[in-house]
Image (cartoon, rainbow, N blue to C red; front, top):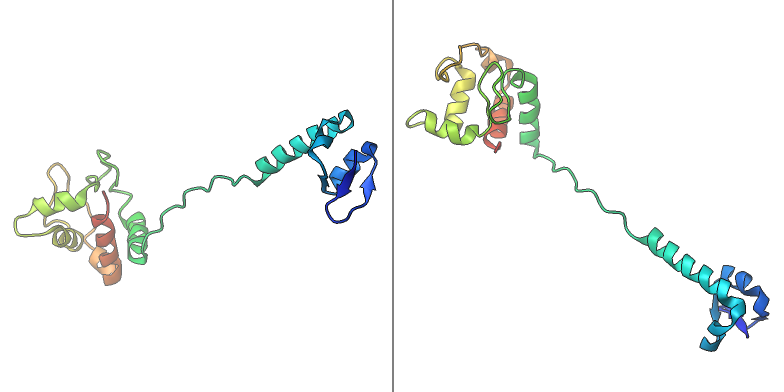
Length: 163
């Protein structure tokens, strides 16, 4: 049996199969695979091929967390800092104030002639104007002075984007 390097034609003896594999060999004839002396080499080559396949297989890429547009990100921060202590975004979770889950749909139907955006602005700037039944008037009336116009716009946009 003759084994040759992939880079040159230097012959190796059949007992040097492992040395030839370590140097990335190729076999000259298919008949050499039947040689019993290279059985270990074939097993090693099969193991090496399987190991390379396992090592080269791409790891599953985690789904990236969706990022919010800047206005909604600001609105989320404002909500968490000024609203989340009393209002939940989870359905049926009522804290001090009502849950704001689905507020975009509910706010549009609360007051005739007022869309959801207008209702939310009024509720922030004049909290006692539209009280939800069963909740006392505890919302701070100073949010219009505490928050900038940009922050109020952002929190309203954030709330309107909630499912």
